[in-house]
Image 1 (cartoon, rainbow, N blue to C red):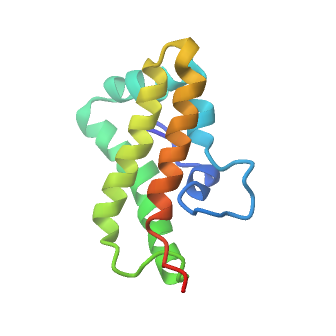
Image 2: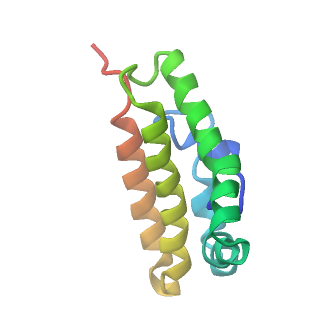
Length: 134
């Protein structure tokens, strides 16, 4: 989710290339298919909170969870151990926020295509963090 919402377990599954349960894999994308929800979560919510409170909310609900998950995936040997966790958490948080914004601003006729393209891009990006198989 963006600044105003928590990262759900399904969003966290999106960070792992092959989670056991795929049904909830891209929750943020699914929620943001609703243009009203996407606009409230990723555009109006942060504006209403103001810069400082919005950043605090993003840190508490999104970036912190992403950091913890990235570290857990590194510790489990799924992701490479040379990943700079804090920097990667910043990038992934931005990815989550901006996918929501992209869907919030997408015209209705293109929303499904954009969602599918975002899902493919997210999967490709996160798969690149995996420990290479030998």
